[in-house]
Image 1 (spheres, one colour):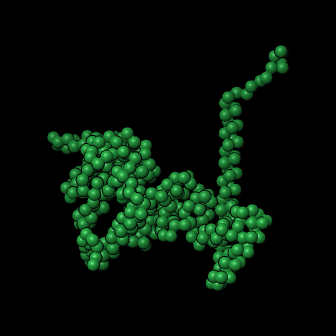
Image 2: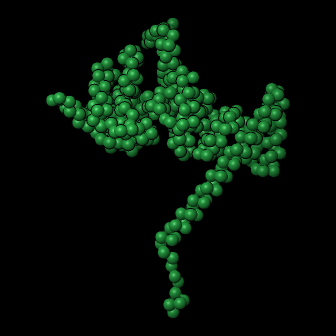
Image 3: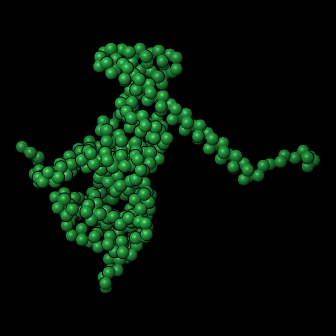
Length: 361
């Protein structure tokens, strides 16, 4: 075979670049198509809700939706059948502001919205939608966050509604994440595989073995800096269990692990760590360090009286075994109600005492 007849292979670099261009173009086309479909579904739901269901004649509206579903499904496929039309109506009702929707659809596809629409709490819907947009969660990640009741485990869920809405509005307009959106309670550490009896060192070792999964439970933005960070003050040595940095908060995050229930003395210890970090480790442009005290149990009244949030300290429980979803849901909803009641009472100058075991008579 002559040299002229031999096959000439393109360079590997050229082939890689062309493949990248094709993949990028396909992704852009898919994003545009997804955004167009999401907008279409919202407009269909909005139109039906406004022009037909707005007449408040339930039976008449159901019949019209059923008729529309049959005709549209025959022409455009099952995606426009009665069941999906009802979902589009729910979509428009859950996200009534078209401007907010326009911002969300740049990152969220229809499958994201389908996971969020069934949520009954409007604050939870807004939380998942905005966090999904900011942190670019996949549909699978979003489903996992909802299933683990992330919203109910964040500090923002325990704030009065107007405060929570203000923080979500800030996130929407400025993409600015606050500690209330980042910190959780409880943290679910069932992946550590710890049995009934273990030491603090066992807990720390297990976290480091499963560091990637632990970072996922902490949330996006955390970067691991070190364990048993030595803090030398005068002639004394102290050791901080875990040290992280949060990119969006632009803060060092100190984590102290405790086996038992929270004790008031833990506040002074964490304050000491945070002030040392602020003096020796905080860089120009960074916000002051924050602390998380992870305990096996909490003492709510002690935590309230100590006003730990004023010191930049968050106390949270950790669960080494995942309880049944119904039990976790009851526990979280009760914690939310108690926390909101305490905040409202504090603003009104009242005192809320915890119920005795067994509840009210």
